[in-house]
Image (cartoon, rainbow, N blue to C red; front, top):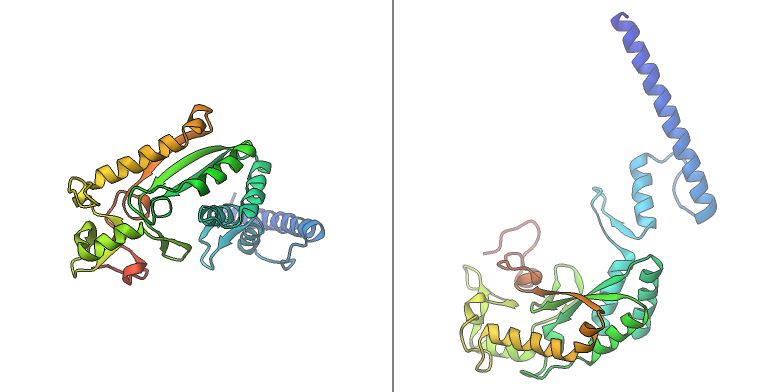
Length: 261
């Protein structure tokens, strides 16, 4: 076969595939518009079709194609965080029922240090979590719990949960309990590992403070462990619950992209 003949055959094949692609897309869009009020132009390119489908499914799609989060999971996260400050239990029940209908059988919940021991040293208030866990149990779901010793918020999050107030008060007098940048800016998202063995948290070391919080959690929810409702426990340390130096905090003025000093 000559070069011209091969080229003509290849062009014919590409045109055939393109016609099939367009016909498939047209039928798909027609069905979506007919059965789900799908709002998209009949001759939209596939990138736009894919993006629109992702948005219909509840995902956020940025102009450059970056896709993240689903509406259901984002709503559940926000509602559960609010619920543990005694807000909107009805909304939690609805969202959990939605998750159950999607065949999800495990829910991850953060137990925030700043909520449970927020007001006073060694005064643990688990009532909000107890009510939440009971609702999750009643829905037939299991739990994976994250013991979160970090603050939550900043970097575009809508929920703000600081470290316990009594810890922040200590930090005003002894800011060395926090990580600091090279220009002296203190980061109050988490405690520095430098106090792990220092008796600085009301005559306790950093490790002792964490240990006693976790011991209180285990004692409070012993029945749920016994019944197998709590299937796993993770420990969140450092900024964003990760064992890392908090190097990109919007609380301290960082903006993407950028370098924090």
